[in-house]
Length: 153
Image: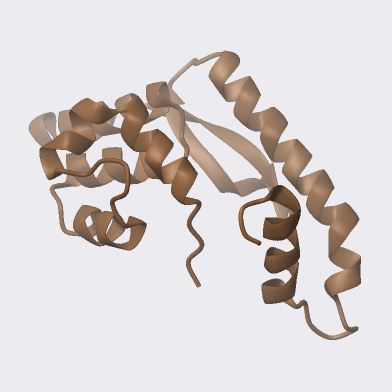
């Protein structure tokens, strides 16, 4: 299942028009078409496109693209650290992005971490009512959440 927030995708187009305009993507472009296009792009464009779409901070996206390009040119792996963000299933290894070795968390990183912690807390508070003892009703959970947020009627 893929879930898109069109307003969030449109915001990414508005925030990075210099990148997206090369593919003629702008507000109103269908997210599935954008993702499918990125899948078959060059590594640099694919990394940048996915990084922006999935909400990684610009400094991390830039680093990852530049590190990949450098490694392709020189054959040398670019040393890096990783920033881990909490998700419901754990604190590490699931929502993670690369940054230059020795990177200190900046305001963008801290903002993402704060939002991730709030999302985990919100899920943990809401989720129990969507378990039937054996399985989790993700469709009903998402529908209720989207209605609450005003994303659908």
